[in-house]
Image 1 (cartoon, rainbow, N blue to C red):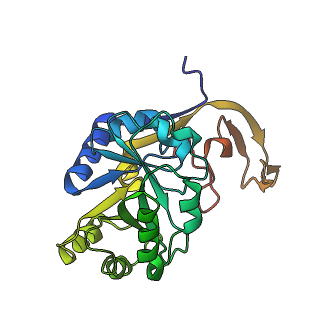
Image 2 (spheres, helix red, strand yellow):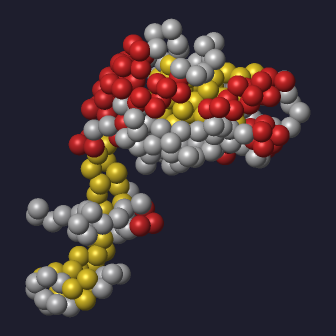
Image 3 (cartoon, rainbow, N blue to C red):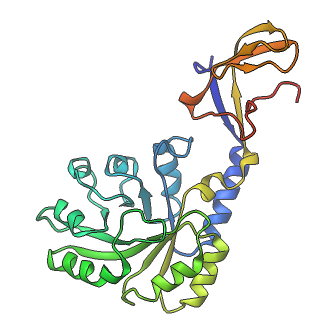
Length: 266
């Protein structure tokens, strides 16, 4: 009676405990809720995030509608189309260039200015930060903060060196630093207000809380050496080919060594 062939089972009690423990540990947490809600459903996850912090970060302007009223929506990517924002009046937009500023038009907006890190995704070079902040203010916008998005496994010293060059009155939002690294940065820059954006670690920090189940659609006997499946993989031995009701359309892919992520009798 499920109506679907693929089900993600979550140990809700353990998941809630994990999320609450992370949120309690991080000062100035900004939960990130984007895409399909990290597999949990964006609207449902945004409602959970609303209990953790006054602001929720989303990926694009098209995801703002998931943020509950009474919470600030922070859009992480620059917005070139503002039409999806009409139904939400508490929004902070990201800008990383004068072109992004121009796309905001003449209406006053609340913005976060993004600094380009070694990831080299959109953002202003640190040398141009002051001029972009001044340009945003001159255009009538309110600069709420600046943001630094490190590459995965990035060096927190890079974030520290960038923080030191930010106007002291502006809060700094950090992405892709661990909680331990963030705590170190808070200690190192005790005169600054640092915020930590968390998505994957907050929602998926302990994968033992998740179990993926799928229906078996059919089975077929195969002989050793027979090429089977999309990738024409030779069967290692005589046995039964099991066809599972899920695949790449669900975001499910082979393990790193090529094996199926599903198992039968271990």
